[in-house]
Image (cartoon, rainbow, N blue to C red; front, top):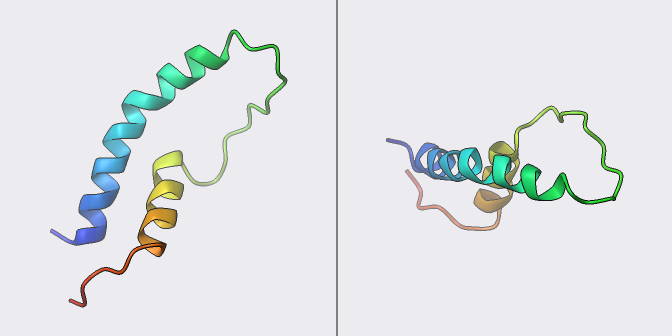
Length: 59
């Protein structure tokens, strides 16, 4: 399996557990937040930022 795909799958699995808990915790906050979904999901953004900061072996 491709290295980037493995990284994405691990991050996506984490985000599926993390995001609902984070939203639940933030729901009690009095801060106004935007509710509009972005074009990319959190796991996609995290994968792009993570992979761009490390050097992967040439394939």
